[in-house]
Length: 112
Ligand code: 5GP
Ligand code: ZN
Image (tube, rainbow, N blue to C red; front, side, top):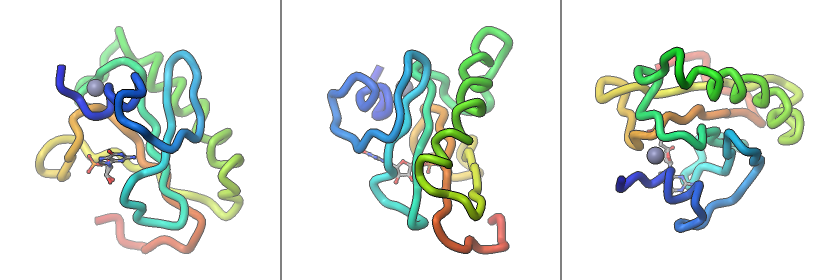
């Protein structure tokens, strides 16, 4: 499968790692939209939030268990935003489920 984020997980494409365990990988976005912009991905290829089901939802639960840890490590004491773009209408550009963690500054009050 020709998936950019699967290649990042395997180390075939370099990335700036923030956190890793056996289920998930977190790294800095190459084009940050805020002072802190981290992507958190499951090590299982799930195309988008629309592909979450009872067989793979443990990965999503684990991502959300670790987001507070990652946010604390990144110094996001003032809060942060978690976003996932799902499908073409939402402009999802990489078809491997990922959660953006944005923070480190005052974010826009507009969601889109
Ligand atoms: P999406 O638009 O699918 O929600 O988000 C994809 C994100 O992946 C974008 O914010 C983009 O900057 C980031 N991205 C794309 N290619 C790379 C890459 O090769 N390395 C890293 N670290 N981020 C990438
Ligand atoms: Zn993938």
